[in-house]
Image 1 (cartoon, rainbow, N blue to C red):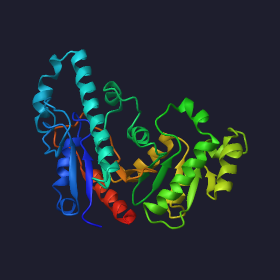
Image 2: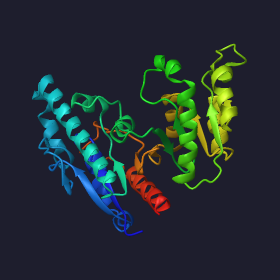
Image 3: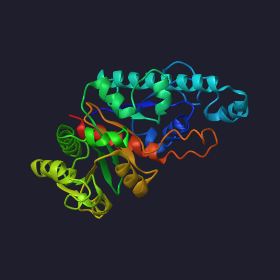
Length: 316
């Protein structure tokens, strides 16, 4: 294919997104690998190609000066600033999806957003994954991947009390099938070895700690040709030792904890199921260190690298 083009969204302009985007695009290996459409508001210290609104709140290089006046801001002003940041972040995501659907870019790499700010800005989504699913109409699953471990979440940004109701046969079956297709098409694994992490401690211990693993997870695993369910405290270890290509976790924190302990700062969030590749770093906005020169761009660089590899693999 011709030289690929990726859309890069700056994320929440109050956070470290602009810093890590600027640092990543200045990396020689990144700059030489593709062309980029940078989407976000001017005024963040990053040269944008597609301007989304404007930002004059002193983020990025000017964040320290902004913080010096933070004590004088009212709570209402801070809330308004957060809502504006969330609105700009959401608009950039919408524009990136439009570009990908029109074929003007071949993939999207997103910098971190603040979920509360996104909601305050008028977007009723708990995160990128759900928003991308809504914008494209494509069923998706969230994968976190590194050179040590791959984890897919069967349920994502919901309260733990809601997981038993959400973890139904249709969702589990869809998650397994999208995971298998994603590993084959996006990562080039011809015969993926997939394991299910158990829902209950010790996989329920024959019903002593709950029967979901025996009545729900195990029959679906057998029908779909995946291994498990295995107790979560061993499933991820077995995968890191090479027994499985991916582990499907029943809920957010059990999967996210495993991947972040294994590879924090080096993992990549990959949205499987979209009609185009989308990746992001494995961390959040880090509002507390924005503008201090402490942000590490390595996960964002890896997200760009992974997105490009998927683009090239899926190219006709």
